[in-house]
Image (cartoon, rainbow, N blue to C red; front, side):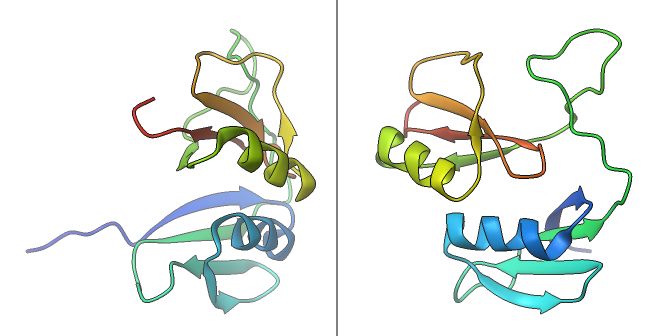
Length: 124
């Protein structure tokens, strides 16, 4: 038996809008789209993908984590060659930079629906 990762899925109140953000950020292709579900994939690669499912009551996690608040259970790490340029590009696409940054060579941002993600330089 072989098990492979098919996709990482983010819950969101607006799957098409969030998929558009990550499609622009990653340069990936859209493989499937309905109002409740969108799947992206890297060009020339079927899996793994990044999918977005409708969750009307989605509550974004807090960052940094604090007891008694919605905890972050997963986040995306996106490797970049130019941290400052890609941070500005993400912001232009609708991301927001978090105040707390844990280390050099990494930038913590939130996508337009509040999911934290990190941009990082190779070796960070």
